[in-house]
Every structure is written in structure tokens, then in C-alpha cells.
Length: 324
Image 1 (spheres, rainbow, N blue to C red):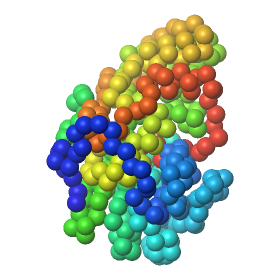
Image 2: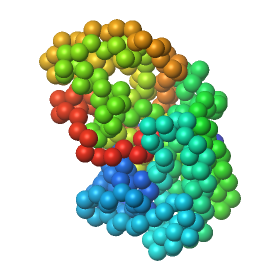
Image 3: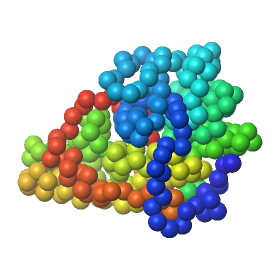
Image 4: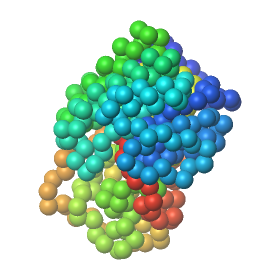
């Protein structure tokens, strides 16, 4: 059954813990990426039999994961791999997230590929699906954004994600449980170096002023490790429908730089107005009430995660293909 975001199926108090994995075998697409590697490792650690896809990328060294060559542009390849694996849960993270992913014409093609994957999975007998959604599906003029906020995406990426969500909701007629985590702004080890958080850390560490982004811009950040835990929690407690996966806090760029400076024992950087005004609204922040009612809370604050990341230093050891 597909949930409309209401509270009718939710746990209303306390943290919900799952002791034994409710699935014997899970298939993951996008497992070579920023979130996918984390999710695969977490599930293996919980005793789940994990199978994952790769296409052009080399399979990373992740113990306990069985890798399958899969071409998501080829429906025969999809059907063959899905039938071979025989998973009872599907986590679909793969998408085109190149530098131009927000405006790429590839977004619409990924809707079709994702629908073919979901259809093959259901045809094989699978009944539990997690697909990564995005805060880009929303109309960003509302603060904070709840799961009931208007969805009026302003980019082809957001429009494609929303179109996919609306299509896969029809799988409820086949008795499928779908959970759709709407990811906000994630950061962490392995993030692409040109992204906001890595750039701030490098600038603060080098003693440079920050003049490429508005100091008062607010975004709802969450460390990728926490996002991973939240997504696995939602799948394994059989949550349904759209759920915001975020911190519920939206620090300014200035506040982020201050946390980084304190963590590195550096001077707080000078903030200068960028030459070009920022695109998008001044603030994007999630209401995470539904996520909390479904039993998940982060183990640390955004500031704590950011400080630890700053002290550890940024690495680029993982490719990042599936953040939102």
C-alpha cells in the first residue's frame, strides 16, 4: 500500500528498532556511489545478503557484496539480473548526477529506466521498494517543507523525480510497499570537491575569504552517514510514502564557516558578496516531523558532523553519483 504522507501508519512515540533484518536479500543500484556504498556496507553489517549493480564502473572493494553487471538502458539486462538475484527488497539510487544533472535531458530517460527496473522487480515477486527522491520535487517558496507541501519542481531533475514517484505509486495495486525518501542537502567524506561544504572547508583551512556564495544562504544539510541510517531504517521498518530525510536545521553559510573555523582552530573567514547573486530561495529547510514519528533521529547534530569532517579532512576516494 502506498501512503499519502499522513500519520495513519506511523509510530507516534519512541525510536523504532529492528533487531533482525526483515529481508533476506536486497538488491541495490547506485551502490558504487556516495550513498550507495554506505548503504551496502550498513546492510552487510546487519547480516543482510546484499547484491548490487555496476555498469561502467569498477566494483569497489566492499566485503560481503555480490556484484552484477547491469545496463539500465537495456530492459533484457534488467530482467535477467533481477531474475537471477531474486531479491525481496530493492533500493534504487542510480541516476545521472553529472555536473549538469539538474538540467540534463537524461533525466527523462532515467524515469523510463527506473520504471522498467521497478516493473521487473515486481514481476519477479519483489514487494518492498525504496527509491531515492529529492527536495527538488518541491516548490521551494514554502518554509519549512513538509511532505504535504506543494510539489512544483523548477528543474528537469526535480520534475523527473516527481514524475517517477507518481508513476511508481501505481505499484500499490500489486501489493507493493514503496518508501520514497526525499533527500535534502547531503555532505560527507567522498563528496565531490566542488560542492559547497568541501569548498568552505578548503577555504577556511587555507585562510581564504569566501566570496563565491551568499553568506546568509540557508540550506538543510545532513551528513551522508545519517542519511544512510535513516533510509535503511525506513526500508526495514516498512515505512511507506514520501518522507523528508534531512536534519530540520538550515545553518547559514556564515555559520557553517564558523563551525569549520572552530574545528580547525582557524580564524573565521571574511565573507564577501559574490559577483553573481545566488540562484534559488534564501532558505530551504525540511520539516522532519514525519521522519521522527517513524522512529528515526540522528545520533549527532549537523554541527558535530561538520566539525568532525573538518578535522578529518576531505577525501575524494569515492565517486559521487547518487546524492539526491
